[in-house]
Length: 77
View 1 (spheres, rainbow, N blue to C red):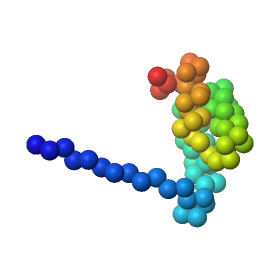
View 2 (cartoon, rainbow, N blue to C red; view 1 turned 180 degrees about the horizontal axis):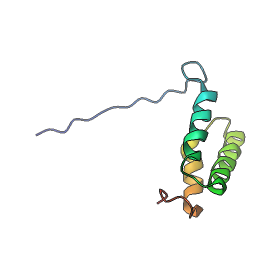
View 3 (spheres, rainbow, N blue to C red; view 1 turned 90 degrees about the vertical axis):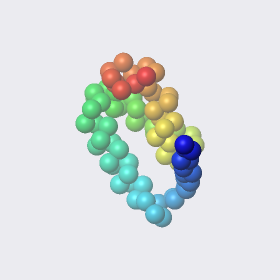
View 4 (cartoon, rainbow, N blue to C red; view 1 turned 30 degrees about the vertical axis):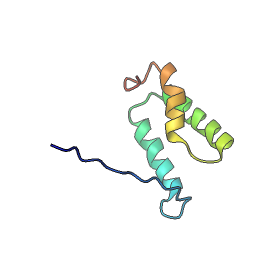
């Protein structure tokens, strides 16, 4: 049996196809539903630092830089 392989294309849509402000609002709300206030503050502090440094919203980068010291987040590896 052959495996099905999928190709995924990621596009930088720069607020053209996505409302980036709405995506950020939804992300903040969703993460706020299961992170403690301290963990939420740490995550979005790192997120804002990366956004200033890189010039774009890097949610995965913020997670990569925050999950290792976030003992309050039961989903961290």
